[in-house]
Length: 245
Ligand code: PGA
Image (tube, rainbow, N blue to C red; front, side, top):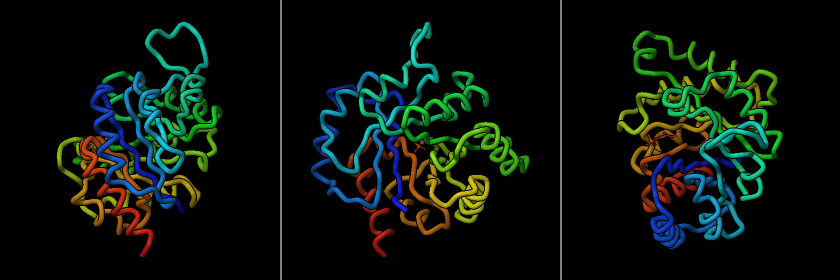
């Protein structure tokens, strides 16, 4: 299986920053065909970012999309435009979209269907809050979020990111056995062997190699460490080394 790492830029980096980043990134990165790399900048920077991408394993992804192609949806982005800009992936259902922008399971389900129908691969994010974890509800929460989001969806056409909400941007991560148990649960829910299951939540250049030893971890979805080309390329190298063993 080809692994996947997504760099979720969130609301960071101007075009001037991107120019500098891409120069540093390509000074450190050697193209390879073991890992797909999805760079997910802010929407207005998709086009600019694409000008730096040679044909190869580094591709564009969106952080979000609307499910309709056209219409009166002020501030939203059409999958047709994402297609035109060359996006191969879209992150769907990130916890920040769920909590800050009120996205519910029905909406996430529609976005997944539309993303797939437009030939892009969704990276579906699921994860528990600290309260849910403390209440011992993690497995139930992941199962509910996954099942509701993927109703009527061909799960071979998507990848999943397990992102514990309390771990995002905090430097805290679950224990290795906890990560492995949740990824194994997600593999069972997916009921296929080809979807990549990414770990997301304070993954970085220091912990990537250890997390990659776990069963059913097939890459990462990264914010903080992805903003630094050195850290991000170190994570890519960790995946390549693991797959070459
Ligand atoms: P982090 O963010 O890598 O900074 O924890 C991950 C994410 O929100 O996708």
